Image (tube, rainbow over all chains, first blue to last red):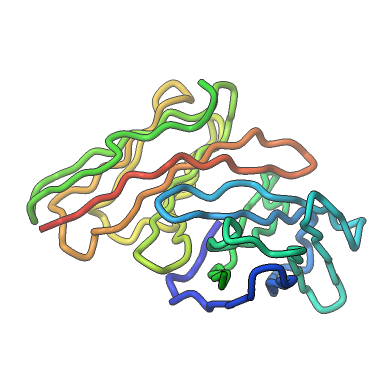
Amino acid sequence: GESVGLHLPTLSVQEGDNSIINCAYSNSASDYFIWYKQESGKGPQFIIDIRSNMDKRQGQRVTVLLNKTVKHLSLQIAATQPGDSAVYFCAENNGVGGYQKVTFGIGTKLQVIP
Amino acid sequence: GAGVSQSPSNKVTEKGKDVELRCDPISGHTALYWYRQSLGQGLEFLIYFQGNSAPDKSGLPSDRFSAERTGGSVSTLTIQRTQQEDSAVYLCASSLVTLGGETQYFGPGTRLLVL
């Protein structure tokens, strides 16, 4: 996967509100998408995934929406909590030359205001 | 092991010195990635190993950077003649590649500071 080292956009949300983090992906052939959460001082951790044959998938307090028409992915977090404060990355997978290539988005920093 | 481990967790070195960073992937994972993350920024891809295939080195920023993966398991990332701009967190991830896609599991990273 490749990602340009740009400064991260920031989303500030009041505790208890819902958060929506957006991601535009680049390759229309991508068939598998993942959201990762990275807390301060730690490596990214898997949150939820979705395959291209779906447009919505729900987990515990999180929902991922996929719009293949406009190559857009979003992560919705319900009732945002202080522990949700982190950087969120989307990743797209597509098969290239017989192996899966993973590309990460630039990430969004979520700040939860108590 | 239970997850991806990296060592050292922190490394402080002087400009011009060589450093070696180690990654122990999850047992059985065939794919291994190295990324660099500067403070407040996203993930910068460095190199990708997949099984016995030739590694994808397209992300290495200069010829001072190299990586090896011995026996299809442990990997080392070497930075020669370190520069201050090499200061960053170096993250390793491994995955089990399937036809359906792959989920990468990340280690905690090595925080490198070049003085």
